[in-house]
Image (cartoon, rainbow, N blue to C red; front, side):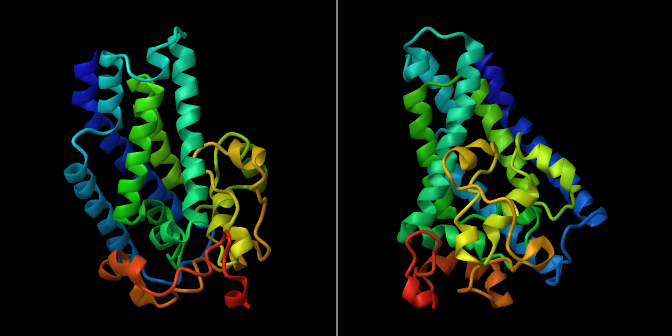
Length: 281
């Protein structure tokens, strides 16, 4: 079973990624929420270029990824769930939920710490909001995120299948909730009790710091509600809100070369948590 999981993991993840990406692109074209002013060719080519760079960086940096470490932890009896006797189903469910909580807390952290905001602001500096925004993260942030994930897997000892499901869910829901798609208001209100919806997460990409400092969840919506970071709607409405951050408003900043060097451009002020309030006036 372990060998099969390792053998088919890349194919499972790639198939899910391409399938969800294709569905979201078609959905965005058929039923968009907002009109996009910047040509897709410019944004999509550079945002997807970041995906290629990040994939190469992860493969070169880490000899083992999360699923592989979970299998190794099981063989070596590392981690909490390999040391205590719990039913597989309970370990599976708790593992997915705890991994998602860690991602939520990590997301809050990269907004709160200036040097980490320098890395994360590349994700927020997109001037439009669509499925490719959900794939746009700086390679150094990806390395940091993978390091945190591996540490959690080592400490928790989750079932490898749960780690794989979490990885597929996280990637898939990130593309879904960054989608420029229209959902009927009633359906959105229902869905956002179960999963982070596009309208829920779009608030987080507002140029208004108080709105960007909310709705940190990617997959499960409960952490925002439980920990006080939930905001239902943007002040200017979804059609009227401004996407991005004040610091980078030039379309030239959307190009791959500028994205890669962005952490070293300009000051780190203006980030949502503990920001320099005087500088924002």
